[in-house]
Length: 474
Ligand SMILES: Cc1ncc(COP(=O)(O)O)c(C=O)c1O
Ligand SMILES: N[C@@H](CCCC[NH3+])C(=O)O
Image 1 (cartoon, rainbow, N blue to C red):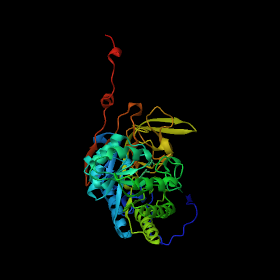
Image 2 (cartoon, rainbow, N blue to C red):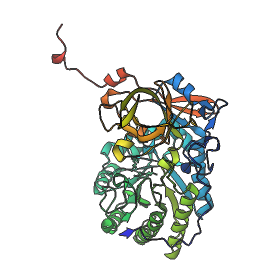
Image 3 (cartoon, rainbow, N blue to C red):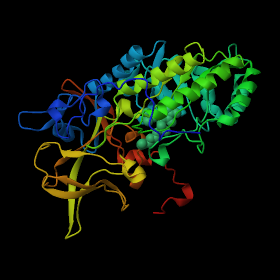
Image 4 (cartoon, protein in one colour):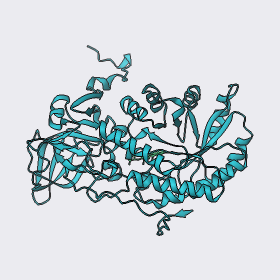
């Protein structure tokens, strides 16, 4: 096991990162090359009245027009992050490289189309994500299909469409062997293994340590590769590992390169072509003022340099480098707008402000105790004069979006804008309390396009069936 707490011996001098912009500096929303270090989308501006706009659209207008809660996605930021990955890989990796968007972070036709148009690929983990990717125009040859418990139907869809399958366990191998029988060409697969690397992030979003449900145990890797060498239905195109999410350290990623290059040497020695090395995702983003993640350039540079060096040291032909950024690609492009409603003051204890959404549109605070930053959409720079706790509207005491934050004095009807909600918010949303899912708009140059319609309460009844014998007798 590699533990990355020890100081690194970095042969590569750090890139000078642009200073992280202060919270509230919306007119200079930070480093255009590394949106993951900014709090606000790149197009965040104040209008002449000091109100916040994004993508040329006034946030409070969006709230009025489309209702709240509302997810707002800034196209310019999304494109900038895609380009940051693309250009950094081209600049820092001496071979071929491709970033695959981990669509679990936020899966929709619009995001897929946008990411595909920027030349990236995509990682899907279910039939739903896979269909969204294919229908959103992502070429099948740029998609990889993951999952620690893929169904036969999901595997069949992937194989039929020519999508590369990431083998996660023996069950995948057994199912695929049957599905692939009689096909003219072997199924392209990558083999995922647990690299045994610890990193500092919430325990629920760590995946690289040995006690993980994902991937083959490293001790089994050789047996798996030997088995696959005798499977004409499979073409082992590479290896995959992923260490976790919302990671600010670079050392674990550097360590991963060494572990993966070693495994690559083994796989090739057993006759597998293994042209691809997929190092997963995991780069963190800035949710609150004190977060200071590495830039996309820095992350890519460290990963790319480490992979090239680790392969060079073992005299391995350079593989195509694949990575799977999710959060760092979409989080900062997204914001959520809420309307403030009731206020409850508990003298000497706390003031609760309630919004019209909560854990159903953003389950991250209740799941991981995640922190967020919020401002009033029309007075983002107004002096914050009171400490409040912003609660959601669900029947759950833990449904709190922001604990003990400072805001200006508010009134019911004010629009609250929460930053960095583009990843793992809509994607992890639910209908708890039968609350419909919010709409999402994509903003660009003053135009807002609805990319996900607001769910209606009636929609929630679509799959309910009332047996005849239970029909009310009139
Ligand atoms: C296999 C795999 N790839 C990519 C990702 C994306 O990670 P992140 O959103 O942290 O970049 C994840 C999520 O942790 C994952 O499990
Ligand atoms: N859902 C997690 C990230 C999990 C990444 C997927 N393996 C989060 O919101 O931070």
